[in-house]
Amino acid sequence: MQQQSLAHLIGTVKAKLEPADKDEKIPEPTFFEKMLPGLRSGEIQNAYDLAKNVGESRAKNFIDSLRVASHPKHGENVNSFYNDFGGDYSNVINAYVSCAQDELNAPNPEECKEDKAYEDRVAKQYKPQGGMTHEDLAFYNILMDNLKKSRDARGYGKNKCHDLAIIADWKAKYRR
Image (tube, rainbow, N blue to C red; front, top):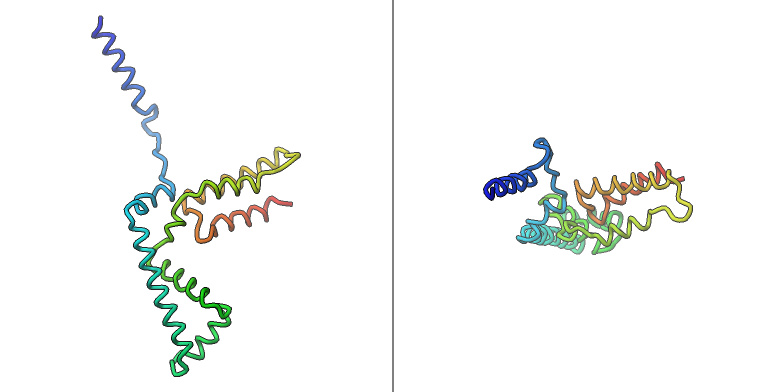
């Protein structure tokens, strides 16, 4: 009798542990879940530091070409400095670091971390207020679904650019 009860109990536990549907797909890891091992090991930080050093070195070379009138690209770079970078050294550094990040495939570690406070702020900012209709709620849910899909696939992007593009598209389509 005890063996039958024990066998029945073991069978019940095994049934609960096995997936109900054998064809059930395991969800694809999100962008942030994929980045987590690299953040923990320091690989992403090391790659970013290298890209930052390369970008800053290139920016320094660019600025040095501005200071030396005999440099072959002096005139061209002076025009670029004022026209493309607004005459601001920090814009030069940011542009060269960004370019080096793209070349070396080295994202900023801060862009690889999930920011729930930011997500909550965006959700609250665009949530319909007051006399909300079913249509307003549906449009809001479309925005939240699109943001979630984008974040899971690509993260937020540099300076939250992926989110900003989705929000701009959503406003153009659904806001009156």
